[in-house]
Image (cartoon, rainbow, N blue to C red):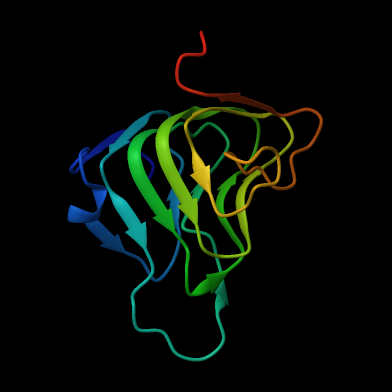
Amino acid sequence: MECPLKLVGDENDPSNVVIEMGGTLIWKASSGWCEGVTFRRPKIASGEPTESSILQVHSGGKLDIIESIFDNSGHSGTVVNMLGTGEKGSWKNVSVKGGDGGIHMDEGASLDLLQVRSDFPICTPWYSLSHLSSNCSAALRQQGDSD
């Protein structure tokens, strides 16, 4: 995705709006919005799991996400990759599951996370950031924390 886009589903139940993916959504747009959408792998899979992420946000790309699910079950690898430097977005009430890792952030990447749930409790019991380098920024907040 190279141009700004708004994806609006069902914020009350993201399982009502499902995008089944065989590959990776590569986000390069300078802005974007996703609300109430489930991204997942097709239920029927055969053979060895393929190593690929559900979402990659590249340098210069920014995607704000609320009330959504990223489910990489059936594939191996990190669920979400934040590649390159700069601000990558603000996420609220997002679930990251499946695969071999939660969120990978390159050095210099920045992501604001509020109530993000993951199968990979690496940083805290509520959030998962894999391969977090010393020069990237992830603001991990719970409901009620000030900005």
